[in-house]
Amino acid sequence: MSDGQAAPGGPRPRPHRIVLLAALTGAVTGLGVAGFERLVGDQLYRSVRSAPVWVQAVAPLLGLLVAAACLRWLAGGASPATTETYIRSFHERDRAFDLRPVLGRLLASIATLGGGVPLGYEGPAIYLGAAVGAVVRRRTARWLTADDAKLLLAAGAAAGVAAIFKAPATGALFAVEVPYQADLARRMLFPALIGAAVSYLTYVSLVDVSPLLRVAGSPRFDLADLGGAAVLGLAAGIGARGFVWLMHRAERVQHRWGGFRLALIGGVALGAGALLAHHVFHQPLLLGPGYEAITWAIDPSRAVGLVVVLLLLRAVATAVATGSGGVGGMFVPLTVEGALLGRLVGSALGRSGSSLFPIVGVAAFLGAGYRVPLASIMFVAESTGRPGFVVPALIAGVVAQLVMDGSSLSRWQRSRRGGVLTRQRSVPVSAAVEADVGRIGPDATVHEAFWSACGNRHRLVAVVAEGRYLGLAGLDDLLAVDRERWDDVAVRDAMRVDTPTVGLEWTVGRALDLMESIGNDALPVLDGTDFVGVLAKADVLDAEDGAH
Image 1: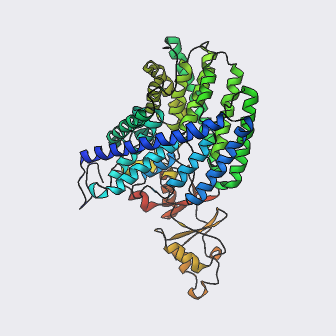
Image 2 (image 1 turned 60 degrees about the horizontal axis):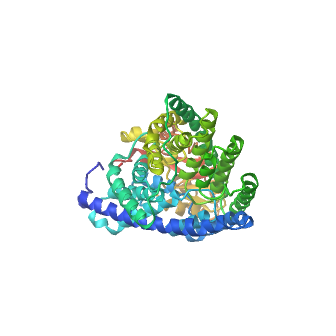
Image 3 (image 1 turned 180 degrees about the vertical axis):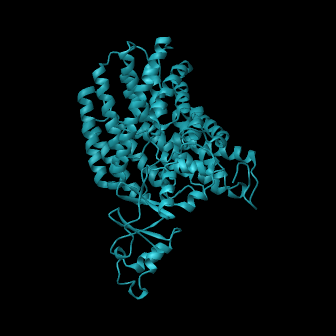
């Protein structure tokens, strides 16, 4: 469906309705984020930070265990994903935003962040905003077209970022920039701006308008500093690629082994890290989002060696938090890593007393990690109240983007907009896989497998053991077994084991070429040895993306 078209027989799009509903989404999100931050930041985390050292060592463990319980029993076994849930929902035109795990995920994020686990508050804020947008869309469905669901989703995500960072332009840009690596969701910009602006006004009316990152004075820069910004951009691009690699490995561990066992291991590790930080830095610099770590590192009296140690420890702690099921955002961890790296580069160039390089490092590292250069540069300007940082941040950001190539923290980002088939061929399989496929154990009967296959759109069932993919059985394979033996024959004896598989990192185009060469219409998708879903040719060729 193209932009501006109404669904046949449905309501015609009305711009003023979108404005009002985006504003409503922003207002509710701003209130929600203010309450969330007051509870988590001002009450729970502040209590942990001011508590004795042994309490600080135990708090992450308790937070992760409570988060695991919330995800399992309140969120129905949902993943810890927050920002990723927004990006995935943005691209899934035929599936509504799932509201069932919202309460469980938000409670899990409160436990995680309140316990001092080193993740950002913006992930839950984005998720909350997207959920508000989905609820508003559902309650007002009779007034809107089907495509308007994505407009309010973007408005809610923008509102979440705008409130938590007190940066409305950053919120709007992030919401429309993060779905794509090299493009913008342009139709979403107007509702995102409305949602972000109203959310910001709502939030600051309850809190304050002080800049998020406090920078003393107005640092000046010259041509040498602009050259240094390019060097910093190169370092940030390399560092961000390493950070992305580390987080993806942590996500794989969480996906495969997630639960109470990993929460226990991760909590103990983070507690040990908190004790180590007290010994090395005499402050709890591994706890919480990390703004204190930025303030500490910008001080020119801090030894460069200690800044290196803090940069590495924060990266490892973030990976441990991610791998053990912590529910939080990556925006702030990227910000912290960028500031620490900027301090190191500034010191190497003889500019250790200036806040210029740490702030420019934020823009470069954040923009590279999430592939959001415009939002990261705007974030620097809004969060510091110093628009003069924009020029060196632009230089560093461009260089960092070139280094990143196709790497990104988000597995659900698409490369860019374009013609439907061209765009679909260039996106990663992770953005097009269909997870709604039956899974059954190898000892199940053909009869059980038949009804499992009939219950999903692709008429397929995956045979798995402890998550590990063994084979695929379609209706044709099952019907080939004598009907009278269905209750006696195990599906392991009827499945296909010779069907080629594709990985999440493949492009859709590569998978389609493989389908064409072997004459298959669908292929199983694996993450290592774990079954994720199927990629079906019909889904790809029938895809429409007009609303984006």
